[in-house]
Image (cartoon, rainbow, N blue to C red; front, side):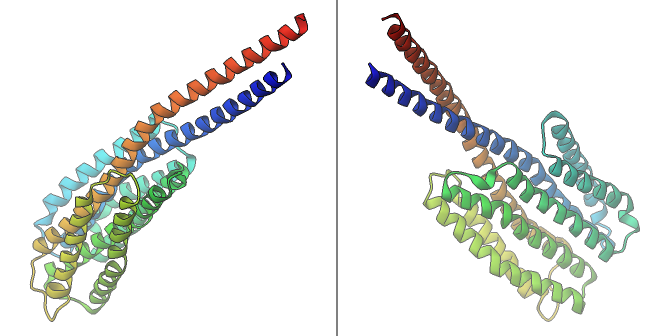
Length: 322
């Protein structure tokens, strides 16, 4: 009888530990799902705000054909802002993330109202500072919602690269697109602008190839369903854009129009943004697919724990009655 009771106690402890583990993982994956959904909204800002910067830079440098495009993207950004505001109103979001988002929103409202009274350099500087805040928001969201603590090592590495390295690469491409478009609109490359473009060119060469290679390796070593074609496409478009920068803007003279350079930069920008979005979506789908399984395991572990308690109580009752 004593041996049986001891076995039941061990069973209760095992079921209890299993229940606690399932509950902790369930909380973790729910936080992940919320964080990934929030990042999806932020990625729209990261997509459209650099476009606005590049168009504003070309417009303020004299290419008036960009005014209508800039106005259109501004309206899209307004919708992006409303969607994040709505999400914040409907869900529990960490205070640090809310405060950083409010900083971004205030900065955007100030920028859009002043845009046509700014110089090209002032506009570019204000846009870049605002985009920097967006990058920090993505990184902070990954940290605050436990994305960086994923139990699978390879997936954790993908997450770290995706949310800490890919956004700066996208931003560097966006800066190069905007600066290069402005130079092409003027038809001349000032020394200060050349230095900035050469710096961005070298930074992209140093960081982009390593990011793509690492993501590819992590995907091969894990069960991730991330599309490898998106990685190859991003790498190809980025290398092509870097070649255009080197040969048609950083050469002896500029041999490409502002609109053509902006278009080619947009191809590289959008392919990397698509890669970022596809990884975010895949991780989100995996997290949401895991949550029901964890809920089921949690319910069963609670049921087994409860059943074991009942069994132990009946055994104790029998001993008392004897």
